[in-house]
Amino acid sequence: MFNIVRKDNIYGIIRTFAAAFKSLPKEQYVFYMSDNNSPLILGTERIRKLLIQYSLPAIIAMTASSLYNMADSIFIGHGVGALGIAGLALTFPLMNLAAAFGSLVGVGASTLVSVKLGQKDYDGANRILGNVLVLNIVIGILFTLICLPLLDKILYFFGASENTLPYARDYMQIILIGNLITHMYLGLNSVLRASGYPKLSMYATLASVVINCILNPIFIFGFGWGIKGSAWATVISQVISLVWQINHFVNPKQILHFKKGIYKLKKELTLSIFAIGLSPFLMNLCSSLVIILINRGLKEYGGDIAIGAYGIVNRIIFLFTMVIMGLNQGMQPIAGYNFGARRFDRVTEVLKQTIGYAVGVASFGFLIAHLIPSVIVRLFTTDQELIDASVYGLHIVFALFPLVGFQMVTVNFFQSIGMARKAIFLSLTRQLIFLIPFLIILPRFWGAFGVWVSLPAADIVSVTVSAIILYKQFKKFNSLQSI
Image (cartoon, rainbow, N blue to C red; front, side):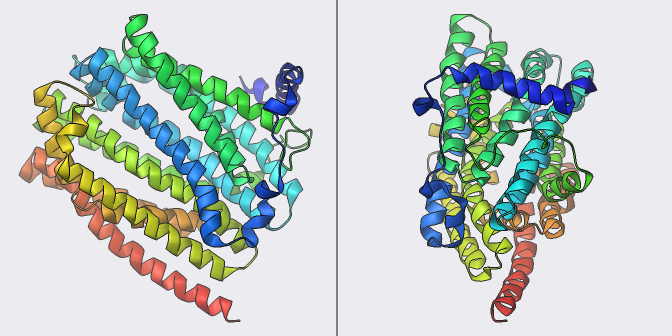
């Protein structure tokens, strides 16, 4: 198994892809770095313009990614039924766990790439690219080999019943088979965005989304594959986008490109990637544990329908948080570059603007959830019992949702400038330190309501902690700028 990640074999794989693309019309498929894409503008262009330039493609891509996940649930809800949505919800912890390992590499690498480019260390940035490829191959294969044989036991632990297990198993088996593709696709997309190509990163995501939405109804309704069809649509769409990304990185005219000598894992570099990526890794890990506790609590106090309701609520939350993540991704290279260049005034400015936009997005989500909840829920299902349970959950979970925008930006900001310890601590406050205890204690007194209300309760406490730490960091930036 480990032979496939040797340097010579990796270079051979990349050369094979390069040869396959050689015959394609380059003016159509190969993108060259223009002045507008140069990472150097991160230190000179107006912050507002940069944030829009870098965030808008990421927002479009992340929103599209969220819509694609919603589309999975919508097609499954109407093509498979309420138990299909509940089965899909049971796979969320495992999907988050896979995302945790992906972010461990992707977020850490993209932050380091931005800092290296800010320092004009292009050789160092290329070595990061090579290490990202190798790490994603190793982690992607190991994750599949460990989880696939234990899948039924894992899903039962997550809250599956005899009714929902077949749906969850059918979906997750296929997703795990394509896990290597997912890791490589997400990892390279992070580097692509951080290296000055936010639009190409957006195009790769959009391509995956569009293809997935086309294949979903064909596979589910046309071929009659049910929930398996949705899983195959996801994997195939990511394969196509990955090929597109590789086409970009095999071009030697790019500042970052695949070449000999960058694939050997360097201990110091790998540890640096993991140190920065540890914060989102722990966040996703805690998110997996949170979803497990939610599913198990709802199964005990509300049954399979309650789990299905959380699956719908989770998809709606995901839509708005992905928009905020798009803003964060736009902020990341700007903050990382200017922090590397010691332009603390620009670092502060991009943070303030990102927080403002994020709180606005979260506030819009709050209004939607309280003004037209049933309209949104009916997109997923026609089952009245599931609709009622989902609307009930939406009202509670979105009660303090505007605070989530501030919290998410604050955590990502410390990741972006390489302050891993603060990012890790803030990542843990909401989910591990506050939310998990609430999920363990409150349902014992209030049943299913206790499960739902744990989410906004954790929001208000964690935001208070984040605000205090961020205020202290602002004071440090102001003092450093005056020196």
